[in-house]
Length: 221
Image (cartoon, rainbow, N blue to C red; front, side, top):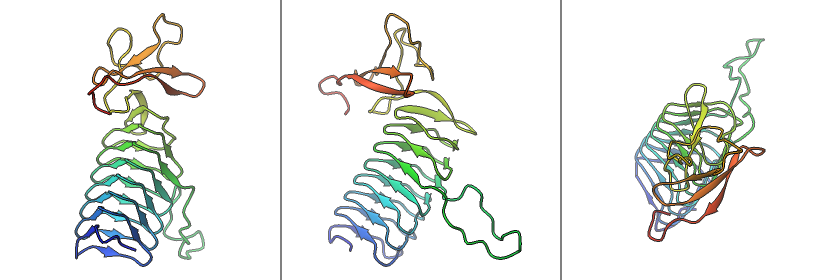
C-alpha cells in the first residue's frame, strides 16, 4: 500500500506488496522490490535499488544509485550515501561446482541500526551489523560489525575513532580527536563533542560508548 501523501516518480518500478509510508518519496528509475516496506518520511533517490523484502525505517535516506539487496534491515534515521552497496552474499557464485546455476540464497542479514551513516560508495558485506550513530566513511569496505558511535574507514574498514549522535567526531580531554581505543585509566576518560556538548564514556568491554551528558541548549540534536 502506498500512502496518498507519498511521492513516487512515474519511471520508478515498484513491485507487488510494497508498503510506502506517509510523506515518503521514490526517485526516477529506482526499483523497489516485492514486499519491501518503507516507513514514514523515507527518501529513496534516483537509480537506486531497494530489493525484495527490505525494510527501511522512518526518516531514512537511500541516496542516488545506492543498492540495498534482499536481507537488509534499515532502522530509522539511517543515511545510505550515493552509490553505496549493501550486499547479501559473502561467497557469491554464478554457477556451482557442477556447472549448475547457483541458487543465490542470501547469507545472514545486514542490519543498519538507528541514525547510522553509510558514506558514499561504501560496501557493506553480508552479515554485518552497523551500530547506532556509527559512521562508515566514503569508499569503505566493511567486513565486520561496527560498534555504536564508531568511525570506520578504509579497505577493509578499521575503527579510527568515535562520533557523536550529532555526527561530529569526538575529542579527548586534550582536545585531540579521540583514538579508536581511548585511555582507560586517565584522570578524565570522557569524550566530548565540541559541536553540541554531549559527553561520552568509553566502555572497553563492550567496545562502545555510553552517553554521560546531554547536549547544550540550542545545540544540534
